[in-house]
Image (tube, helix red, strand yellow):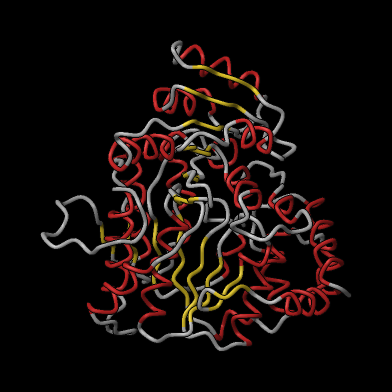
Length: 421
């Protein structure tokens, strides 16, 4: 089997959509020898900030000298981004080998792509004897494939409205799904600030006998840790990561110096990522794809780029709350270009343009056929913001030459799910 053939096999697994439940993943993991039993985890759930918090935890523990596995999703460009050790992407030959080894056991049970990738990651991390794995949920938590592990600590970044068609229409219901990662007696840290959502997390933690640490509810420390990632919201993520380190200090000691070093050097592409090309044109890439993310992006623009008015290139998915996202972002630019996202679930770019025009009548709003056309039309503009979807950000990274182009691996992020039981 070649790498291209392995990717094609993974494409085939998309036919089974995204199932909610642990049975398939547990079965496949058992057939693989239950590699999760040989590993230690920090399990991270939440609406926004999961990836950034995972990246911070990984960076800190790696700075402390540990061999750290990192499992995240979706990927921006290459499927290999989902499975990393010490921020090195899993090699292509290991993707091929793991697909060949796990394929026979998966075929009888209609294993989904995410279930398969979850067990691939477990097997790879166990083979390489990772000291710790930073383990991000896919969707929700309670019935997410990642929830077959028993972690050292559970982390819930925040609770907001996203994936409501599957997780529920209220913050309480969404919080209940996210808090499903809490295990009996395992400590929990959260930055959730919504009172109703927090009450759900508190109730579940109490019922499980799990000590709960809340961050972000008190003023920040007098000497906040410097974080390499842009945005005031990253300070809360850094507090959450630091609190998690503190919770586990007796089991995995980390010095304050290494915490500072890890936060100062953390890298997480596609989230307020600033890029400059050879002509001096600047691009700000951010994967904001829900209302809370859009508001956070707008706040970051006002804080870090107050004197710049970007050209906004926007595309998003139809299953997002795009009217409210457009409303949040409409004031940030005087030139707005809407484009389709390379996804079957893309929102209609012309409809998006109408919303932007209504929200910001003074803006020049155009619709173009794709991101490539938009980048070409505005290549003389000094500052361009690309946002609305991680799909769009991934395409931008390829088109701007920041990430090597792949043979359509971004399409592996496509999935269809049924309502959570």
